[in-house]
Length: 138
Image 1 (spheres, rainbow, N blue to C red):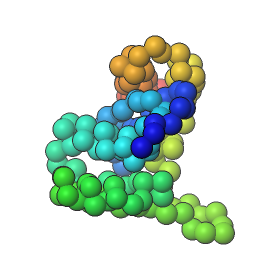
Image 2 (image 1 turned 45 degrees about the horizontal axis):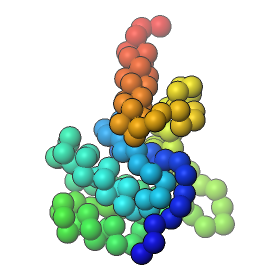
Image 3 (image 1 turned 45 degrees about the vertical axis):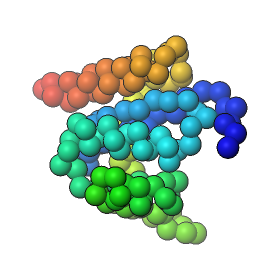
């Protein structure tokens, strides 16, 4: 299989039900979304081994569901949007909301970093800053 010649990077994050970051994985845009999801799921389970259920959008359907069950004995549930109309689905927007929070940080608005390691670090720093500001009174 020939690798795609796509420039840029993709960010995959795993969040809890509040939208707070569990882990992040930044990699080349040439890697497919399903392969990137494997990286972030493995990291999330290394950090929080008690996770039993993962929610994902329609882009992660297919063999990834059986891969998660086979390798980790966990459930990957695909949350699909209703066809033909807009309807708020309870768990669908959590990750998108977190990406929205993170995109407020100038350093994350574009891909300024030279390495994926520093890119992941800036996502973590931004999330720490966001959580600290939520703890402060007033």
